[in-house]
Amino acid sequence: MPEHRYRFLRLYAAWYASGALLLLGMALWLYLMGEYARIPLPAALALLMLVATLLSMTREDHSRLAAYLVLICGYLLIAVELPRQSGLPSLWMGLPPVLTLLLLPLGPAMLLNLALAPVWLALLGNGLLDRDMLLGYLTLVVVTALIPWEQVRQHALLRATDPRDPECPAVGRETLHERLAGEAERATLLGQPLAVVLIHLPQWEMAGEQFGTRARQALLECLCQTVVSRSRDHDILGREGPADFWLVLPDTTESGALLVQQRLGQALEQATLMETGPMEARLRLCRPRPGEAWQQFERRLQAVSQSLADG
Image 1 (cartoon, rainbow, N blue to C red):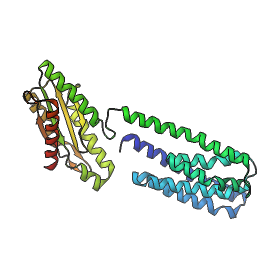
Image 2 (image 1 turned 90 degrees about the horizontal axis):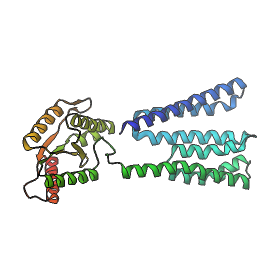
Image 3 (image 1 turned 90 degrees about the vertical axis):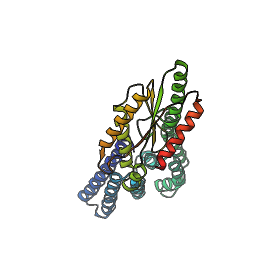
Image 4 (image 1 turned 180 degrees about the vertical axis):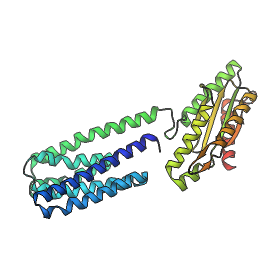
């Protein structure tokens, strides 16, 4: 999981903790006001919010469960407090759709908002549906949905145009093959040597299964940092498969490529991670054969990568 995803989850955990504090403050305020019959609900919801906070901080797999717990807390509080409110109906009408869009993906949030529209409007109107409020509610749902919809569109555009792999600093598979084809063509035209170091991580699958996505992400980042720190600026590190990487070495002779392979092998052997221990990596050097077409060289690289994966 990327670092920005960690920050995103920590931000949500901070929001959940703030919600728990607000509910505890509400329970204290009700106690001071003598509304003892209304205290159990915010007190119980504050405990649920604390559970959601702990879930969101432990593992990424629990983030969706934490969001649903927070959504349930919000719905219960609004459903109980909404009939008691006599002023600012538009404010209370806007809370459920906004809360839903903040916690759920766009599609499920829209369906849930439309399905619960009669419930919120009936609670707000003491069992009666007001036409103006209905139109206002639907307008608010549509307008607030435009923001996450634009974010989804921008993220899709970014993923389509970003040359980097989504899980590590290496370039993606499509970009790797495009740049490798360009380097192969340039090497043929200029008569320059070209080499590719193939790297396979046999620990990748085990790290994800036994220690979770954080260990797997740490393994990928450690590999990329180690390789990039010992490569030239114009060398290309790309991710061919989940556990397979290609390091393209333009204008590099066979002796120079062997030296790079030896240096990388020693550096990767010295790298140690907390969960998986010393890093294991299988390396193989490949160079284009005289008169070999680019498509044949590409197929040979893929075959060698598969042989490294098979052990």
